[in-house]
Amino acid sequence: MSKALLNINNLKVSFFTPAGEVKAINDISIRMEEGDVLGIVGESGSGKSVTAYSIMGLIPYPGKIVNGTIEFNGHNIHEMAEKELQNIRGNEVSIIFQDPMTSLNPVYTVGNQIQEALFLHTNMDKQRAYQRSLELLNLVGINEPEKRLKQYPHELSGGMRQRVMIAIALACEPKLLIADEPTTALDVTIQAQIIELMMELKKKINMSIIVITHDLGIVASMCDKIAVMYAGKIVESGTIDDIFYSPQHEYTKGLLKSIPKLNKKEHEKLVPIKGVPVDMLNPPAGCPFAPRCDSCMKICLKRMPEYTNISDDHKCACWLLQKKEYEAATGGER
Amino acid sequence: MGGYIIKRVASAIITIFAVATITFFLMFLVPGGPFLAEKAPTPQTIEALEKKYGLDQPVVVQYANYMKRLIFKLDLGTSLKKRGQEINDIIRVRFPVSARLGAISVCTAICLGIPLGSIAALNREKWLDRTIMAISTVGNAIPSFVVATVLMYVCGVVLRILPTFGLTSPAHYILPVISLSFYPTAYISRLTRTSMLDVLGQDYMRTAKAKGLSQFKSLFKHALRNAVLPVVTYLGPLLAFIMTGNFVVERIFTIPGLGSEFISSITDRDYPLIMGTTIFLATLLIILNVFVDIAYKIIDPRIKLK
Image (cartoon, rainbow over all chains, first blue to last red; front, side):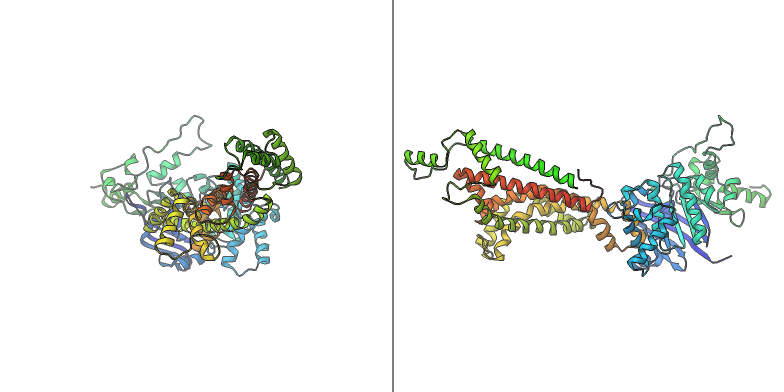
């Protein structure tokens, strides 16, 4: 196994709100090698974005890391001071946000906002930074870069702004790019372009990518590995083939059933996942998905299952698998 | 930009014309006259004086004469009370005094209000925020003449630490400036707090942090410029406030500015002086508002001046 670029171990992040502690991330572990593209999938509020922010040391107030470690590129993110984190952000790890319409500051030119990152992390003079920002705009496929540098965000379209965001993120050639729902706010045609662009850039500058999304289509077209999150836990993780062709967790299966497929019959209905997402203030004692799960057993409501290793990469936390294992081991006795 | 300025100049001329017209006729609706003093002159004298200044003619004729002189010669006439003094000269001497006081007050309000509001926003719901907001609520509620009177009594009469009339030394500015800038400082700090809180939650602030900017830098570069936009909008009304506030405050502190001249011109029924000061102040306000619009455009590139 090569050296891990990112190693998250037993991470717990909680938000201490007036109403009580919200365990946004509840004991997750992620490992990424250099060059990996990892997809984190899950519905709203499952802790995908908080995971991303944790890696950058950007957990918003009143959130805090309660337990666990984040090792990234030789740094221990979880115990770094703000000052040190600032040297890493935008430099070794960058992020692209969901909404390009609001993620750029309206009162500064595109050039100013790209060069800002360069001035922060490199010793470039003005001339060199200008050249570099031109290169970056070319790299992300924006035409007439000289003109764009002088323009303000409101003069660009949504797709263009997302390209500018990517240019900013790539300014210092990060080791890891986090894309937090990078295409959710864009037109479908633009979505495809942006994904293609990210994959191209990944090859060009050999970076790793974490894609956070609830769109399984994006995951299928970009990722090598997938982690499925539900209520602050990774319920299943594996390679793209593991997840798409032999999903083990009931939630993963549900997710896959709820997306349309071209090769299915015309009138076949999509199956939504029943019920409502977990109330994160009062999560259930056992598996968080249990109240919505068709195969729910007594134990599911009481205790969280351990991970079952299906293969080297494929892990899943579900009592059904534990039960199968148990039955296999004991010959069906209970 | 050129088209915008032409448009603004045209609308300014119409506005000033309307102000002049309305003031002129309103002025004559008010009973009394310039020559009715405690020691009233004989009716013959009054008649002679009125004839001399053309006040015996019908109001419409007087109006036509006045406007002719104003438009073709930019001449505001001579004062009726201060014999032989040109209104233009009075404004030339008096206005700088008021302008200096007003400018210092506006600067004070901005330089205190914006930092106070920002500090309050950054310490949201903590004691510092609550203290600043409590003071600013008080500031919002008390009119400048009350502030002026209280300050005058406390600092001038009881403590005897500050001069209370005239503007002959820097110390003389302290009380009038506090009286004039108290309300706007309170208002601006409130405005800044609200918009700062809004800006701090914006996505581009998160982007700034994600780039690796320090808290301080992202506040100064990314937050402040966006947060002051509402304050810039308020500058127009603020200037009008300072101008009218000046009338009262100058009176209270016996400052020889244009504001106190404006008030005495009304009580004196010094018709040309009323007209002169009104037209001058209206013009000034319009010009300042154009500058505010241009400043707005410079700070926020999304604004289009039309």
